[in-house]
Image (cartoon, rainbow, N blue to C red; front, side):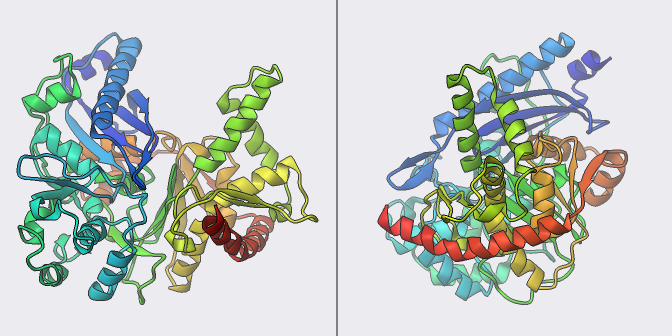
Length: 527
């Protein structure tokens, strides 16, 4: 029966380009909680000419590899190789800068969200708009290119995000989901598209610098559930060079990883939020009212349905933690033990539970790249202790886990000062696969319940597959109702409530962490 469903295309396919993995996820369109097949491909960004980037050839070889892996998985499970789907969705890392000319040629290498070279533009636009414009936003990259007099600017015809680019190549449509678009330029939630007044201010500011008005340069904005084009013959070949995939498949609007994370955790209603932990880490909290003040730690984006969200985005997430786990895995191998990476993660995470609530006075900074919330333009990963710190493996691992949440907690404290109410946070990402550890520490860091669902490890690839499945149901349900009634009605969640000792211990850790940022700044200057 499942084989017939796959062959008939009663499915939805989600593809997400994350920082270190490109994932594909195939689900039952009628029961989106049912994952039928998955595929993945590992890749990594490069630091070239002082810019974090990915080569576009690597984008397509990675997408093709993840798709082929999914096809093989479907064949291994059910003995069929799908040639069509009910709908497809594409998601990717938000923000950044992909600029193309009239011949659809990339003008400069892809500048990812991780770059922090736009401080002058971001500060100028924040003042001009009266809204926080972070360094990673696409409009900050565009304005900085104009300020720097970059020679490619007069040739710009189109600027988009990574998800928008992949979607465009597959469908021919220059569109973007509202959640992803909200990380390019501020959105007016009353209209569901770019804020017209702020667009006019920008056009006046850069008059004569661009060959077209801003609205002609940015992708069109679509809400969740809107038709966003169909797979072209060229797109089918690009996704599946074996030519088995048939064109004509409908697409949902391409979305950013923040939006798909919200969908994957059912965090699209006010007073809910989610934390996504990967190469970066960020929290999304759906707002009941506008923020009172402008804060550089908070930017306002939207859900895939267009509702306003406060975002705390940190450039550095679990990469440094993974590097330490990799070193311990290698030590085990050197000592003759056959321990794989998953087992090492599990053992070290559980060891962290034995540590002191404040991590024994140890500090871990995960800053591989610059971190605007912490005031850092570049990163230097550090592990710091004083002579009287309690230097044990348990405290070391607890400090590393706390360090993943350190900068995030600084931003969330600002959100709390705004009086934003939060009933529950949902979490997803690979570090939450070890049950009850990272989840518990995050609950302590935020002093709020943290729930993790069974789909947490599939993350955004599943989330964008759900948005693809929503295409067929959007006429009957809004997104919040669809998720509540059709997707998460019976979905199990494991919820960790804050342990008082963890709350107090993390607060003490964070005080020291904040003071120790001076050490980070000194390391950046000296090394």
